[in-house]
Image (cartoon, rainbow, N blue to C red; front, side):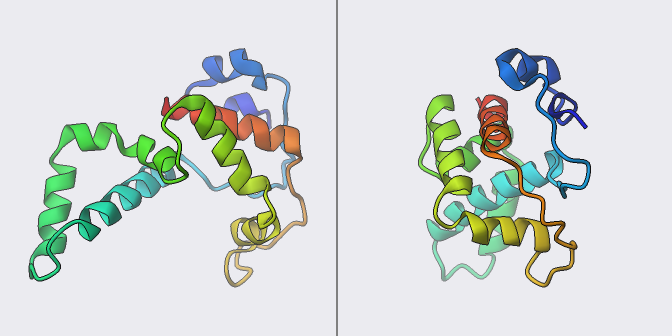
Length: 145
């Protein structure tokens, strides 16, 4: 499967140098649009909850209502992913994402992403190379910005 088939922004991704890169068919990859929405939402909601009054018995309901009824918040949900690694622009996001997946703790992340905490996904032993990781980080940064 070619990487350019992985996103709805295929033409834009291919134009940035992703064309021709492939990932093995047996590489587990369950990341999709709804996963990215959930991740961005979780990051934003956690920040909102931390900044709110903890003594409010309806804090969670009020926070959820406030977040999901605000179209501006929903439009910014993906930027929360890059902000969570300290990035505020496309180039920094690409570099920070790559540092997260290719740093010293990479083995731990790869294990969690492929095996799950209990090995439920059946680790194939296949790990993408640096070129594929860099392309994926670039594609994510382009999608966000």
